[in-house]
Amino acid sequence: MSVTTVTASGTAAVDSLEAAFDVMTPIDLSLVFTGWGPLPAITHVEEQSGPWDHVGVHRRPQFADGGSAMERMTHYLRPGYFAYEVTGFTNALRLVVERARGEWTFIPDLDGGVAVRWSYHFTAKPGRGALVRLLIGPMWKRYMRKGLAASIREAEQVAGLGTSSAD
Figure 1 (cartoon, rainbow, N blue to C red):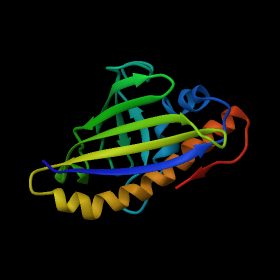
Figure 2: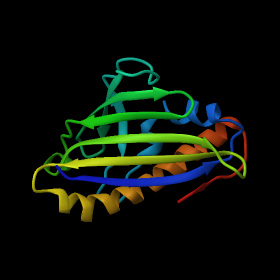
Figure 3: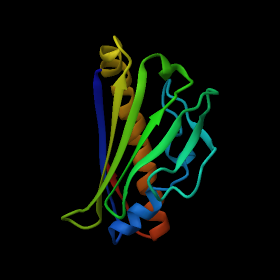
């Protein structure tokens, strides 16, 4: 199977890894995924099995196009890293994506603040690798940049601190 990786990174002007991690990990997905081009917003989450702070917890994000997916936390290493797997897409992504893996990494930035890296690894359905790599990947990168910037703003707002940068 073909895997396409898309990454966005930025710096949160917060005082500690915990300040970034503790806001961004359980963040309201409707703040992050507001839609971009043909990629729908997440409107809300259903079936959340508990706080988004441990391995095994799961939830079902609901998309503005009526679709959904199942998301399950696979790694939780506070305050530096968490990862999750997304499966069971019911919208148009179901035609090309078998599953996706999201990973967030938080490290001290040498100039202050916290460097945040968000990677998404799409596993394409058989014969769909080129479509994911050439179409979904570039669109998702824009979607991610917008979402990461929103996540950083939220962490800074909660911390009551300055401005951020995101690529």
